[in-house]
Image (cartoon, rainbow, N blue to C red; front, side):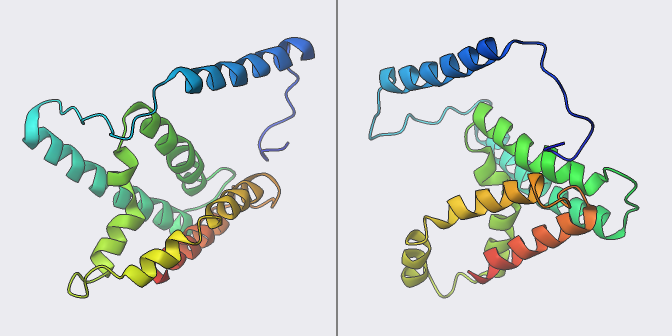
Amino acid sequence: MAHGVGRVYQSPLPLWLYLGGAAATVAASFLLRALVRDSAQPAPARRIGGRTVALVTSRLLTFSGVFFLALTLATGAFGADDGLGLAALLFWVGLVIGTVTVGAVVAGTWRRADPWATLERAYRTEEAGPNLTMQRRVESMWWLASVAIYLLFWFELVSGVGFDSFWVVVALLAYTLFVLTL
C-alpha cells in the first residue's frame, strides 16, 4: 500500500537473499565508479546518421516533451478520473520513470525533451542577454533539488492523492509556475 495501488506483495525471496542482492548491487556500483576513469574532457558526442537526423531527433524530442506535458494537463483537467487516470499514468510512468530510463540509455535526451526548458526559451526574451545575477542565484540554490525530490516522493507515497488526476495537474502547474518565475 506504500504506492497507493493494489495490495501488499509478499516477496518469495528470503530476506537474507534480498538484502545480499541489494548489498552486492551497491558494492558493484561503487566498484564500477572507482574503476571508471574520471576525465575533465567529456567524450565527443557520436552522431548516428549525420546532422539532419540529429536535428530532426532534437526537434521531435522538443515537440514530444511539450506535447506530453500538455496532454497530461488536459487529461487531468478535463478527463474522467475512474481509478488510475491517464494524467497520473503519464506523470508517474512517462515523466518520472520514463525520462530517467531513456536518459540513462541515450545521453542528452532530457536536455532536449524538457518541456519546461522549452517553455522558458519561448517565455524569456533574448534581447536582455544572459542574466548573470539570476544564474548565480539559481546556482546558489543547489539544495533545492534535494527538497524537490523529497516532496515528489512524499506526494507519491504519503500524501494519499499522488494518483489523483486533479492533484497531479496542481503539482505540474505549481512546478511550471515556479520554473517560469525563477
